Length: 228
Image (cartoon, rainbow, N blue to C red; front, top):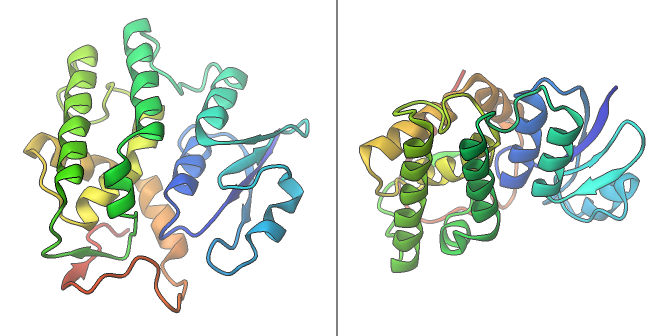
């Protein structure tokens, strides 16, 4: 049975990336519908998924519309209990849920000051004190996840989970703005951004043209380092 998945621009829509990874990484069948986040057609494109008003949104095979990434994540995990969305260990599962919830409701300065973009890596970006506070909290939570899971490297809980889904766009922010993090955090960013599914996502949006380019800042840059 196939879901309908509504997403927006691959280069810039962090929440769409999360929604797409839930299907792509856990092998859930879906039909993809693109929503014009920057073209002015968002409301029209999302009309079949009313009353959803933001991306990602889904329509289940039996016609139920679900918006908001946390709700989508829990809905898919409930409907596909053998897919491995959450860690099987209770302590790891509780911690993974915590990490996802905190990401969805927190890290406000990091998300506001450093919008996700997969075009380039800026040089000379100066993070604010608030962003540096978010980065410290982020690394504290990643370290805590590894203490609970025992996974020193790779995915946060050993096996790929929704925690990795939710933090992939955060990793893109760290790399895209060259934000200062520990070597362990930097290695985790490399793990998630070099994943074949993420490379596939970026490749799908690489040829899109924007005028003006969203989130462009006047700083020198280098090309995005992760490509198929």
